Structure formats: C-alpha cells, structure tokens
Image (cartoon, rainbow, N blue to C red; front, side):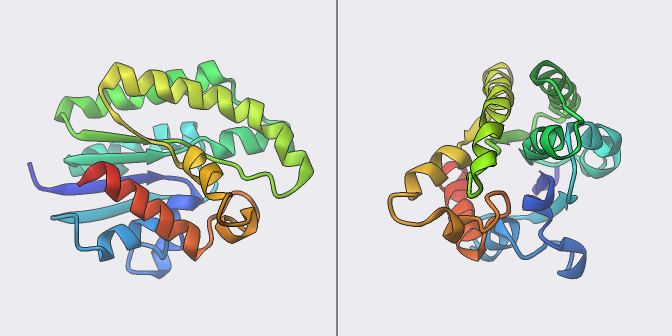
Length: 194
C-alpha cells in the first residue's frame, strides 16, 4: 500500500484547497510543510460538508486512494444547520453514518485519526449549540474505541489555549480557525501522529 495520508472533512480542512495546489492553506498544508509526514498528503475537505456528504463521496474521495492514514474532521455543520437552517442531524444518525464509513475504509486497515469538532462561542447564542455538538462528540469517542482509532481533541485543546489566547485569536467566527489556530491544530495532530 502506498504511503498516503488523506484528510477529509468540511471547510476547516478544505481551506480553499482548490485555489492552493489542492492542499489548501490551513492545518493540512502546515502538516505537509512540517516535513514530518512521509509520502503523499491528500486533502479532501469540502466547505459546508456534513456526515451525509462524506457518505456521498466516500468511495471516490477516500476508498479509491487506498490511504494508509485517514484523518476525519466532521460534525460542526451537522450542528450548525440545526440552528441556522432548522435542519438537524441527530447524534444517533451522525454516529451510525460515521460508523458505516469507518467500516468500509477499515478493509484497507489504515491508521485512523478521528478529530473532535469544535465551536468557540464568540457569539452568545453559540453557547447553546454546544450541547448538540457534544452529543456528536460522544459518538465520535465511541467510534474511536470501536475502531482502535486515535482521537485528536481539537475542541479540548482550544479551550485549554484560552488561558493564552482569546477565542477570536484562535477562530475569528468561532468555527473557522485563524492562521494561528491552524498552526496549533497542525502541531496537535503531529504530536499524536509522529
């Protein structure tokens, strides 16, 4: 199997990848530029994606590459759409869909990194979203155990960093990281992977 590290998720992973050599200008680029990961790095983030969107493109964007490492960061839009579009995804449906994707890719026995989605409540109403997101995070933690995956606790890490930085310094709108936020994400991922 080729040495391929594949990242998939929403806008936090996407980071304008189609305008930046397919790799984007966020944490995936910073991981690549660190020189600490051998082989090919593929970014398959798409802005706005939810777990159902990953299902629709899992074969072409993940399975077809037979990656040796798969990193998944998904869930914030499954929460966000409940509040801005009245289109909720239950934690049970989220976890069940996620499980199906991992069952498929496990046929190749890749190393799995399941990332904790996050919201920094820069606006007061965003605090109300955290309960919904936390239910999905509990599902992700179940899947980490089921599949022997590595858990990347981005949300917990950002909350710890609030002792040093403001929420806006890490993610201006509470969801999309700043350049500093992406660098810190890359550093955390690397600390678990190498």
